[in-house]
Image (cartoon, rainbow, N blue to C red):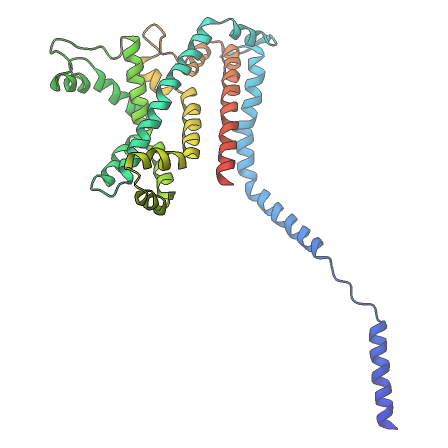
Length: 325
């Protein structure tokens, strides 16, 4: 009788436990949301100093420059709102179009030359030879120098009678002894000097990109091509260069954007001369704003340059996104 009561009590307890409603658990999605909010709050707290400085020194100056471009503005402050007059003035300014044309000319000369030379240097630096370490360091070192140092070296090397270039051309017999080319006085030679200096200065970064792309190509591809009887030249044009197509696009867009912003070497080597033949768009904006005390018109031309760079930046972003996928 006593044992039976215990069984009845156990059965009754089990039935009561089944009838008892299950303890509610907090939804997992709710816990995830709370954790995400805490992480977002922590991230915003740590990012707040950067966001504040970025807003003050980058975002706000953009809106300020937009307001300046709609005004007649000098170094002493605003002289009145003029609307779109500065933008209309740029459309009729022959010096603006000449500077834009010089910038496009500089880009057309420099970018293809730099890409071809960078590929050749990367191929040399990728070969298992004694000159590999020398090529990697010798062509990258100029890219770490400042534009002022590069410009001083370029002017020194291009100087007539005492410069390295004329002495070298005399020594190898390409120039008679009584001929001294003026590398900075003639428009064509000034362009050669600017383009050569820019290629020499910026080739290091492009070489590294091409070198990384070369090292991603598997050796099995070249071994299969060798078995099929493909020569080295055929492997270069049928395997190496096509497999680096995304790197070609990336280097091309980066160099185009950099060339449209060219200022330092033009200002320090030629000063925009002779007779304004090498004046770039950024140099003309600088001369208009600070030389002619017309910041409103200079700001309007800056936004024209911004639109050009925006197009190439969007292309670069699209290429980079496709490359990551």
